[in-house]
Length: 337
Ligand code: PEP
Ligand code: MN
Image: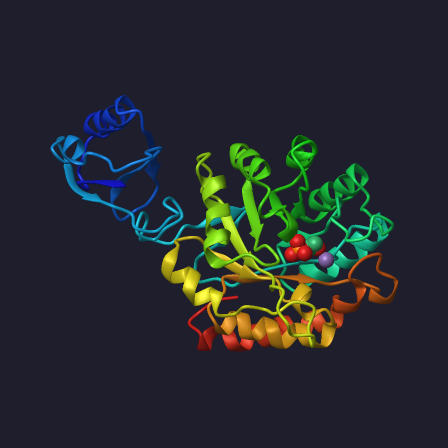
């Protein structure tokens, strides 16, 4: 349920509504937004007696949110949520590009690559340091050493970074370094981790589970938001289907659907569904054409020697070509780069 208050409502009447919600044993959520003052209500197991709230001063409307996800729903918050990482804003007209290797492998690798990516216009780096690998015998990431490398690069270039957090045990460490926390596809259903990253208040990149429905995806975001954290960027990264010509099937149609149902920004990872690098640029262009707020792309200075996902990593030169193409198509889509 959503309690909508008049635009001119004073703090006293807003506090009064919040108090009344609490007294009813429910949980109030102040919905940030420029269009209206609204307070979301969760915590009910049955129907709520709306009269109790509709008669309070400055309350102009009570809206029952029909979607199973409440706080992430556009019914609750009609205006787009803007998520900031440094000066970068997701959810606005600007197309935001995150790029970097699948895994941080060495200081040299990151130094070499970051300069080139920055020149191409990238402001946020990606790089895994705790890797959720299918095989326990594969490279598992550099751990804290990798975080130190990413922090050094941030210090010298001013570029922010996103990196994956795989469990609650490592969360305090990763949160101490990272500007944005990635929840990987394999952890989209890890509800205690979702709540825990919600509590950090950091910007979160939430990837869609490998076989998650749209509703499960938005429900995962709801877990984070219930902790008061609205800084969530969703990420479509392909789902498992019967198709064998790609690693995963990129579900481009989820972009306009999410845009309609939720106020959260959504970006696309074209690398993991592609599986091989020659499909990355076409998938990227398709995603932006469908309205994605940005991309997260794997790029490696020497993909043949990469310790993870080398075959889908772009050469820096190819990434520069992608950026050029995006610069050309952005104005036609009424977007900026
Ligand atoms: C990654 O970003 O390198 C990664 C492991 O992604 P996903 O969780 O989407 O598989
Ligand atoms: Mn990867």
